[in-house]
Length: 476
Image (cartoon, rainbow, N blue to C red; front, top):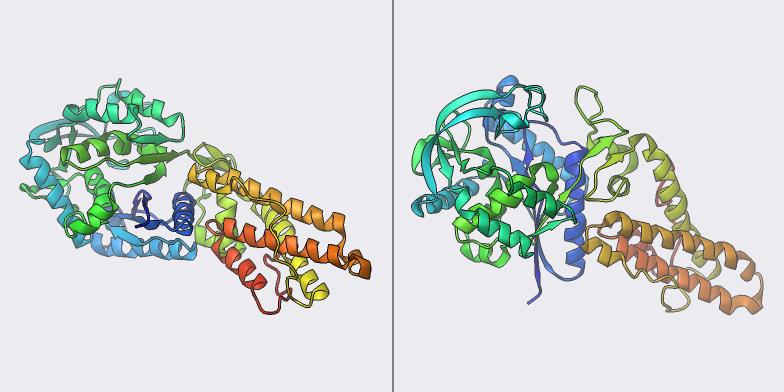
């Protein structure tokens, strides 16, 4: 039986429309999913939407809608956007799904019966924007550092999870590499949390109406973060399909931005240990990005809808532009102002021109048939290794270096001159055959990033009679 690969994105809050931050994480996960499918792994790729909590209820109320109708509307926008970006997820989970509720009830009932959930009172600060309890020392000038708003002072009866009981075990799993925190450097950040005052955390809210009722106290709603984390197991059958769940869990990679590091690297493994379940193998925490040097915000009006990029540049070009801005995993700046310039240079001129030249010369000088079965003169030795390390920029850099070398081969060999000399026929056929082999190898390697482009290149070279066809990328 082939190996399995279970990959997830975070589930995205439905209180807003999809933007390029959502697209960035999801495209990265899609590249991994497509790559492992290419390697004949059994792949299951999950993304979805996080639909409960006070913030969603407030946003629905502001829109004059019932929470479920509001969630239906905005969740559909994420599905449409991911379809527009050619995301190949196997499942789209919504936390308002009945099967998710069943899994949450089963999980919390187990923890409660084990004695890992107890009743208590929470008194302190709560940021509705973050949907989390926040400590005084985290505030900046009395405000939440992320949402620039003063948190609410709350005092309410809650149920708490015995986090402290599981912290030593979670720490050991990280230190011995059972849970890998990537990229390198993030593990140190996570281990630093264990030196802080990590307290037992709430698994419920008393005064929130929009959420999943606790199975052992229906007056309380499941705390939205606990509800959301459980999507990774309910999406694969925890609660309604034991065989499917056991076939896929644990997750091979959770991909997300590092702002949700504590929940995924500390709280999530602790909850799983309490339920007697295996922990995820890898948590990959990519960095934050600015947009043309500025933080992305609705106030500045610089929030980019990925659908607008697709309309302007096309699906594959949008995927390429987002993943080549800076190394995945690091903080960086997305230079939207230079998108058109990069598109024209890398895609229309370099790649598009190469494909056009090679197809044109095979049609013109070889009757539309690749004359020889040869190997590529430029082996793409490390692309797969880079993808497995989520070093997408390095994989794409190697691919584009091959494109530039191929254009250089054409300029140096000058096939149009060889074609005029009958004595150079053998040399002409060798050069064009090598270029065709290079394009086929390039197409296979680029498929996880740019699936439509790969299909067009492979299809063009496998036709009974090769013709130049339309430009691969039209200049913008």
